[in-house]
Amino acid sequence: MRNLQEWLAHCEQLHPRTIELGLERSRAVADRLGLRFECPVITVAGTNGKGSTCAMLEAIALQAGWRTGVYTSPHLVDFEERCRIVGEIARADQLVPHFERVEAARGEISLTYFEFTTLAIMSLMADSKLDLAILEVGLGGRLDTTNIIDADCAVITSIDLDHMELLGPDRESIGREKAGILRAGRPAIVSDPVRPYSVIQYAEAIGADLWLLGRDFNFSGDKQQWGWAGRGRRYAGLAYPALRGANQLINASGALAALESLRDRVPVTAQAVRNGLAMVELPGRFQVVAGQPALVLDVAHNPHSVAALAANLDAMGFYPTTHAVFGAMADKDLAAMFRKIGPLVDRWYFTDLDTARAAKAADLQAAWRAQETRKDVASATYASPMEALHAAAAAADPADRIIVFGSFFTVGGVLKSGVPRLQPRSPGS
Image 1 (cartoon, helix red, strand yellow):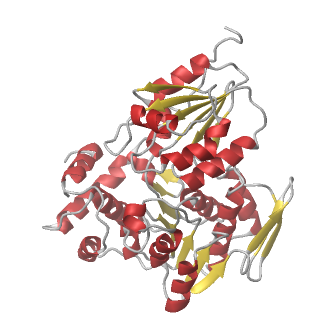
Image 2: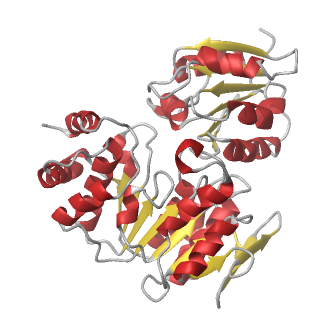
Image 3: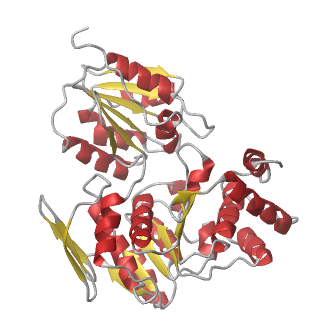
């Protein structure tokens, strides 16, 4: 393999299954690599809010002067987005030697794409002389490759129904899988306001240092500012995070609790908190693109995150027509997602996605028609997210709103050439 793209193609061919949960293969290869971190590690699991929480942790720590490394997945456009070193996206030439290391170490062990790439990125991070490593859990927690690392602090964000065929049929089952990232005697930050009891039960059973939102840390705010209080520390008069959406205060609160729990090893100042939250960026999380018509990009891809998207859209104010570009994986609870956001959408643009796991645009349209009760809503199907977006822009008036959501592949599909700049039709044309 000569370059990163060839390595990624190689990784896709190694294992007969796309997803196979379990730590045995990854742990064996990590042992051969001698993979370990010399700095504090924070792992972040949850159904929604993981990426935002990781971005806030990173932004605050960078403002405090610490060398950070972040691993997140999936990516929107380029694979390299999955790793940031000191705030910069890793370069392909940085990653390739670590793919080579994993290949040399694995021998006869068959790794999935996720396992191989995660090990390569963690190898790069472990080799980068970091002060703080932040690892976003890919799926579940207990059996996710990131869980081969004994984190110094674990964060569990909001938990909802997703990947039920792998994680269990209800929030209690899913919560138990997420809780697998917790460690005895170490901080366990739970920022879900309505956490499953299974998370608390497991934390108490292993003797984790449990921090609960509403008990050990909390937040309050008004229209102008907000404040946070934890164990022995408070921040008042904070500006709202640069990431939009009402749920971001919950994510920010969890991030602050995690940093507070590690204050002896990675101290941060109040100014670092203010600057970090003011400057944090994360594409595709209720990302509002300036211009006319308004454009909103959001990777909401399950009922819980779509409900949050709907609430955030509702808070934006009045728009004559809302156009929705939507593509999703075939295993999603489409009916629940349509129920959450359907009342806000006037025209649907269903799109195919560039992955075998995605539902076809025609199947999405059929699922929508099966439960749509409004007679004034139009729909059409398209071969790609960009084609759907162009159709929406051509149909939209300047005062309208276009939302692109449903999957990382949907949002990534319209970001491949950079942030789109729309040219609406003339009013009345």
